[in-house]
Image 1: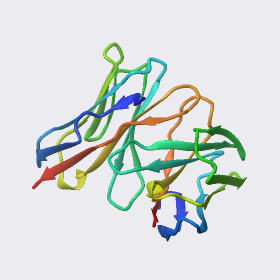
Image 2 (image 1 turned 180 degrees about the vertical axis):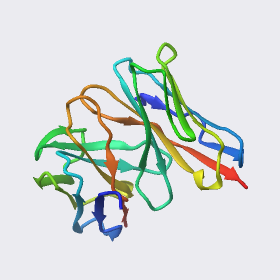
Image 3 (image 1 turned 45 degrees about the vertical axis):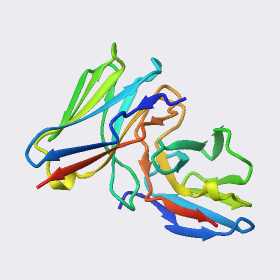
Image 4 (image 1 turned 135 degrees about the vertical axis):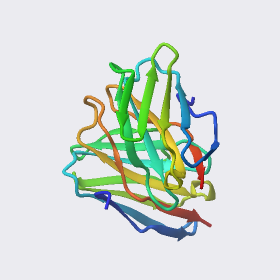
Length: 111
Length: 115
């Protein structure tokens, strides 16, 4: 039972353009959402998070949007840089901090 | 330096071997986690420890045995594994488990291959 889904296994974007990574969830009890970035041979690195009381959180080039009614969140990276090329994982948790992850989207930013 | 270290980084073992994975966190956190990541699958939560007490065992087979001697160290003891157990095993820590959600910080993982 996959409660967090990233339906696009890969995404390719030109340098300088916007990257939009999408994530859907099914459990309405989730109230905290995170994005992690993973380079090969490294563990996931925390990127940005959002609480369910907000619909947007911004940190530099990274913005996460949350649409609770649609159970959908997205990560926008603008402008995209070649160093952003990595696998991005969406994660969600509720009060018990039992975090569920999506399968990841591999982003490639072309110079 | 992520603050969470794991050793070894790579491990090859036979099905009859016994080995242990080690995780150490230097972040002053009280909760530690073991995850399994198989190819093209989401991270799967295996175990949760909160203040050294195991609070979750996510239906993990008994051939995986966790140990948490203190809040900074976490072990995963492996015995009689199967080839399908080959995966990346990730350790994570957070401030507290079971409370308001907070961010988990991951180690680099141990790439395990079972022959």
